[in-house]
Length: 386
Image (cartoon, rainbow, N blue to C red; front, side, top):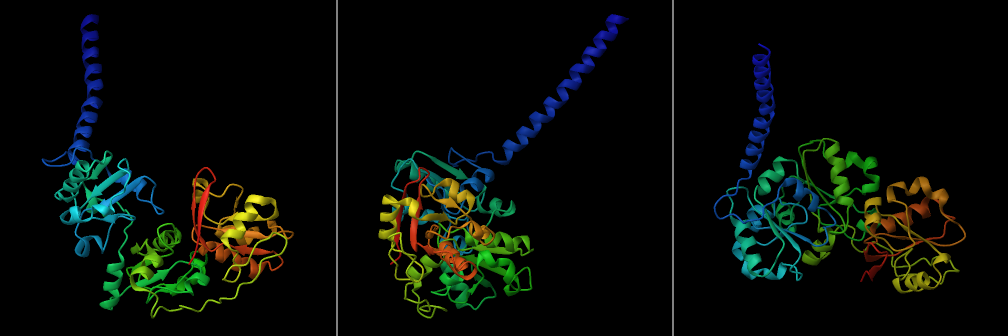
């Protein structure tokens, strides 16, 4: 009897142990089946989670996301942020858009699992010698269904304007920058003053909101777009290339606020050998770099970008006071030497200067109006605005 009971017990335990294994195997099979490669698909695939990690503004270094769909009908009205458009039908004519470094990670996508354009383009790129390629086979339908943020192109913005469509275009740059020139029809709501001007946004939460700022290195439009979504707006997109691209394509003619900035420069505080730039509050790149090289202790250099940006790379010796924390940290700024503000484009650093002059006039403030590329090792390249 005992032997029989032991046999039954062993069988029962075996069946219980096998059940989880069966369900895990079935679940794994279902998961695999959802992305099961089809005939003709490119060999290396990726998924939404990986794409979301790569689709950042500023764009990831060593990564290029490529939208293989046609421009006007599909890419222009909605694509993954930072993606470059190389339609598969135009691939051979637009190979110059691909990076020179053949080890760059290329991520292709198109219109979903029934779309072969991204797979075709990936194969063409491989033949050109690119060695690190993946295809997001589920593409744009999956991206949108899972809540991925969407960007639009300059051509789509122009189409909205020409058709007098219903939309709200928001410039998230500081007022001092936006006053020099904005995209036509835009309103200015600085990201740092977003909460003070929410009344400028449309009452209808389903309205199309398009945010832009100072280019692919500028995070202000992404930050403001996130705040708008948090308020319940359901149709929020960004135009990452922002004003720099628009000005290059269409110029400043007829742009609200163009030419209103003063050309007079207010000289920064004496004693640090800094030379005033053309715009009020600025110092020249050359004079800053000379002072920073010869006597960095004579100035306080403040990087006003977000902590995440600062951690990825800054000027060695700079301290981080994010723009949205500056007002409460004004008492910590020295009064015995100049405080020089920097960011990636001169937009937030200019806003920092304005804030200090308005709320802490006894601080000797200045900023650098330049495009700055920061490296993780503390080195940088700085190009003055023309």
